[in-house]
Image (tube, rainbow, N blue to C red):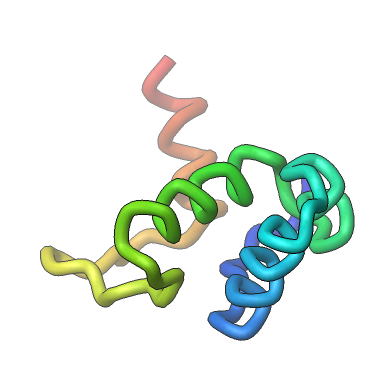
Length: 77
């Protein structure tokens, strides 16, 4: 399974710059090694708010690990 990580803010700005320069969303996604939907959502966020910086999310912090999440998903079936 592929590892999951968030793009750094600098990578987000570079991705937007590549799209503005004329590269396709698919090409930008391949360059950064992420799914095209990640870049598509990033582009939509930029078009709406003119920023790509992630804001902290309110609410309760996540306590379980990814391994525990997978275990719970299997047990719940």
